[in-house]
Amino acid sequence: MRVLSAWGRCKRVLARNDEAAWGMALIAPSVVFFLVFILVPVALSFWLGFHRWNPLRPMNEAQWIGLGNFIELATDRDFLRTAWNTFVFVVASVTLMVVGSVLTALSLNAGIRASAIYRGLFYSPVVTSLVATAVIWLWIFDPQWGFINNVLRELGIPEPGWTASRDWAMPTVIITFVWREVGYFTVIYLAALQGIPEDLKEAAKIDGASPLQVFRHITIPLLMPATLFVLVLGILRATQNSFAVIYVMTSGGPVNSTNVLVVYLFQYAFEFFRMGFASAVSLFIFVLIFGLSLIQFRLIGRRTELL
Amino acid sequence: MAGSVQTAQKPGAVTTLRSNRLTWTRRATRLVLYIYLTAGALLVLIPYVWMVSASLKAPAEIFQAGVNFLPTSFYTANYEVLFGDYQIVRWLVNSFVVGGIVLLTNMTFTVMAGYAFARLRFKGRDFMFFVYVGAMMVPIQVRLIPSFIIVKNLGWLDSYQGIASIQLVEFFGIFLIRQFMLNFPRELEDAARIDGCSWFRVMWQIILPNSKPALAALAIFTFTASWNNFLWPLVVINRPDWMTIQVGLSSMKGEIIPWGVLMAGTFVSAFPLAVLYILLQRLFVQGIVTTGIKG
Image 1 (cartoon, each protein chain N blue to C red):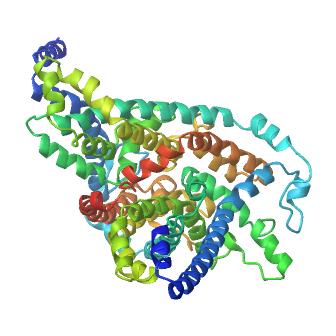
Image 2: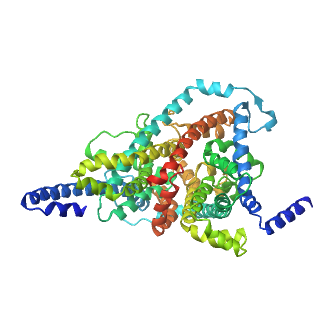
Image 3: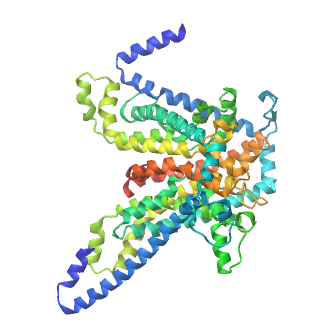
């Protein structure tokens, strides 16, 4: 009855066509979603981070352990290894992605015929899912029958064990990830390049600047904002999207050599069922990503001008 | 570019020599560019070719030394095994249904909110938008465990609503739509308002038809994000018949099965989005430039 009358009142207000009423009505569904799937989960994560809880038991049996999870985290050798691996994965893949995408975007922007076809092709891995990408490259890197080792065998070069080797597993997942991501950043760089005013370059040429000088003193400086933007976005994507590639290709192995934070979190939560500890890991990731996103967001303001 | 060569040619013989050298360096650059781009194109293409070719190879051909790039015979048994022994069609349908739900809710709720934030004045609007921007930066990882607990308590494990739940509203999408709709001049809706149009009609008949690029970007973004999503479905799905295509594919990889069948599965899993991409290439690439804010 109460709900019914509330609905009736709501309808009357909207029928009056009150701007504020419409505004609130239109954001209402997303507010509900925000409460149930963002605010409550984040609060619950903080709560769980300070508790020990077995998910098979009711939640009120969870035990308050203060900073226990975080202390365990800071002293866990696997966690430190995982944090280091995340760092290596992110730094290596972002570097390769930036270099690869800058070079590709510059080549595509050099006024070549068929550049649209190349661009369409370079972007296609982005549309291929991370899982499919990981499976394809797992097959290419297969130590016994994979394409790469078949070629190396023909050439008489010693064959690495790739995902089966502790030394090579990390490069393997990085290559796979970079292969998929380069096209994404190429498109962003391409947009930035096309945003550089043509008359600026013309003016420099009329003043007698060589193409190399134009590149050095106009193109590179004007690409710096885009590069900053791409770096932060790249770090964000590499931190989070590493999950599918690493989970499918190595599950973090062999012997934790490719384990990263997002996989570590998944294992503790859904394989070892240590929800409290896993929540502490998730809070660590949260702080990391939230901070980076804030930087990213500050850059968006400037981005409108550079793209 | 062409203009600079012409200006160099005008004043006589000396500069002609210079322009000759210029064309030479330009030719060399052009050659290097083509070599680079073609090498890149091969690097992109070879994995796909290798995938399709393996899916058409008999086991004897797969487990064979040496590089045999293309299959010698057209071996279709891998696909027969794939469609016979695995629920791949069901997985594809599941992914389409979940993607459809996510598309539908985002094209309504997300767009509605974006419109309200851009065009309407109401109490608490700026505060709520500030909160939503914060929500946009919350990574999935921190939502994962609690959302799992919530969905489990709702009895939504192994269900479409459970898989779709995490993406029903994209806060980044609200941001995207708002930014786009801010660009219209106020006069656009004022005329309609004077004529007695309701706010809903203003949105429906004036703002939305003018926002097609943003709506297309949002549609493509949400559908591909849902289609490619892996972590969340992996958490909320236990039974094989509820698997999305990504989870199904990764479960196939978990078993010891012939590479040929796995590659056939990978090809089939990538096929729908590949077709969509080929048809809507321009929208995909433009979408990136507009949505390139999201990780």
